[in-house]
Image 1 (cartoon, rainbow, N blue to C red):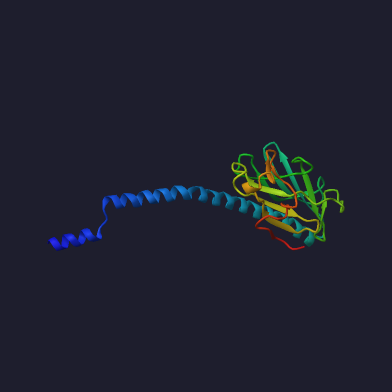
Image 2 (image 1 turned 30 degrees about the vertical axis):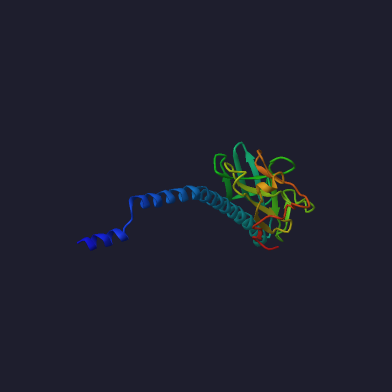
Length: 215
């Protein structure tokens, strides 16, 4: 009987050992929660960027297939941000049911810098897939970069961005908000990021850049 009792004690765990293991599990869980939250918020940003990219690609393909202009209007009214697709040019176009709407209370929002402010703008895809402004001016400058970000963690969680070239290609990526590069990429409370273009920090030197559609 005594031998069996000794064997059991040799292979068991003491109360102290169990408490140590439980404490370690608690510490590891506490340390991992911020990382899990950041991952989840980043996933939401990525998902929104994909949705935005899809509506842009739909507008371009629609213009090519119908051989007529298709307009995307980006607007902010109060706390609501909208991206609306119209058949034809802005103002006289027909809404075709494709749109994205962002409530100001939502976690993930989009923003853009159009002339030093977040003013409304529109782009028109032409039958050849190229982009002009809503007036059809082919000499128009490149459309503003669209930033997709977590408004509650704008300086912590890496924001995504979307660019539309004049030839109609869509480029997705992530802005670099590394604290070591403080001052290079800053968040403007209006709702977009300001990226300083310098030799040591070119705007296009961002991680995760990929082309969503080819020209």
